[in-house]
Image (cartoon, rainbow, N blue to C red):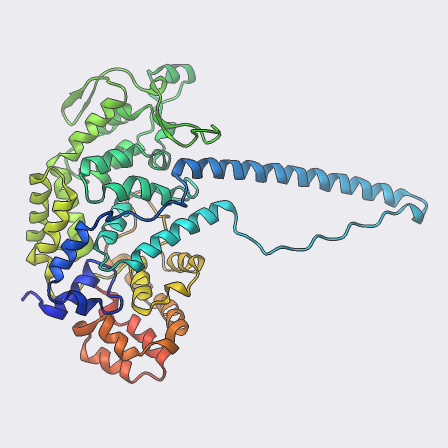
Length: 479
């Protein structure tokens, strides 16, 4: 039976958002589905205030300059150390103590500031946490996180650029057409570097002949296997190789370029000449347009619709989602020509998405966001601490273990549940004197809370313990 009223409202906020904040359950109880649909229609949905945040290209140049300056400082320090050693040796050889020079006073230590790449990451992380904790409903923000993980890059490969990548390539298209999202992602320098396309050179291109260099197939393979068609969808190794040839020349301007370093550029000297056949279709050599044409066809491929439908249903509803729900999402994707707004609307209006069984385990990042929303602790926990907590729980922000992103299945996270208790205790300790645990139970879980959970929290020895138990309750851990 489909939930109604406050039960449906609580389910909606946990399953499709990050959990309730304040009186959100009561606020949407009259029409939970309508609240989710309204979240999709908000002006600027998915975007974040970014006036003070640099672009990815600016970040790349800033980090390059920072590292160059640091290297220069290290060399100067080495020279100074060598000069000091030579001076000390000369003084030791001096016969007269009167020749000894006084040592310069030691400089006063200043409070340590994080290096520039870390500062840039923290600023981006704050914008992300603020968007999640400040959302009224949170559905669109969850979609941003889903697509950012689907099209993941890594801050370990391009320092501090993962946040700007999410703002530039993911957020503007999260409710638009899949083909536009795909084009934006695959041509973004963060992706081109992450999947090594900046190293890929057509063997018969001018640069390939001159340098004796060849293809790198990583971007082509992951675009087919992870981003569009999915595994076992009928493409061959020849398709991967030919697609990699198509994508040669998709690169970036080196970070050392003072005005435009870090920006996307198509370099025809790297591009493999001639037509290429991918999935049985021949694509004439049109420079950068050859790659865009292949991406457009991949975006409209039936296998892509099925792959995206399966992943969306698995992410929001269950590890083994109802086949009928996957079918509805598949059909909505194909019928709307990959309109992600229509796909999202289909997701939240399908009865199969409202199963009362809440078997889906929240990933660490989602649980942290939910805990912050429920307790209001976001203003008291420093961003570096939040980033550290995610890393400790196995989901380091913008640092996925592989190109397929962080796992969406319970098996990947269930063994780490006990480690969440430390963060639950910290959140509780920061706000325990300001909150009534039983009132918070109603605000954050409402009718979802079982009699056992209510009894456990009521019997807690302290407010802090009660709040920690609430955040670790099965109903709070799942959606």
